[in-house]
Image (cartoon, rainbow, N blue to C red; front, top):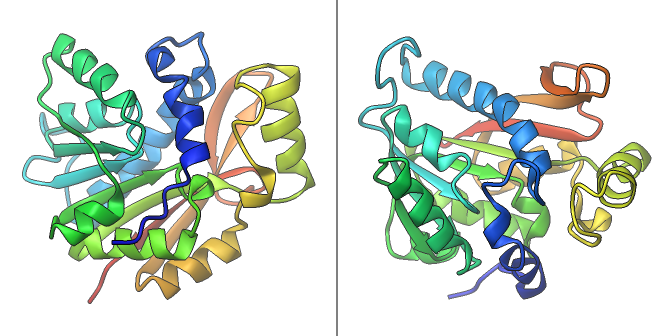
Length: 245
């Protein structure tokens, strides 16, 4: 079994595992981004599976995989919405952090120290795969996205977010977030691994999925919040793709 895990990338996040649920800690950017991510994720899932988000458990009956789940910042809201959630992470230190927090929150989530490739090889299949801020950390994006394709049932939905590669993304995601604001430890991201929206769409298609939507996630420094944009994909962006075969 081949793996697209980059050990150096895993080690970065393993070192930060204890900080996952500290909104002022090393994952402060993700805590700030999370409402925007959830807005996109829930809207896409509801549209694809004809679910009413006003219902008490709108995602009841859907099996969902959160790849690179970290401490569970996305797994927990998905479980609250009724999904049957498996959270997978290649960094072993993240799993007990996620498990303890889910228990404290009264949530049942199946957290596993594993990879997308291992899950696919084991025959696991899901209605939804959340693939958020992971593809820029793997050694082989196409092989990784192909494993994500294999993890989806026919008609299944993958939500994938990453960072664009251009001077603006370097200025904001590397220099701004790591050097100026110190939101993240230096070296968290490798700008050369960032992927443009067109490159990601090509990779998604090569992996056998059909892209159906993409939007930018834009930070407003005046309002100090994130919002979705139909036009501005210059730094952070998110895509939705469907397995039709």
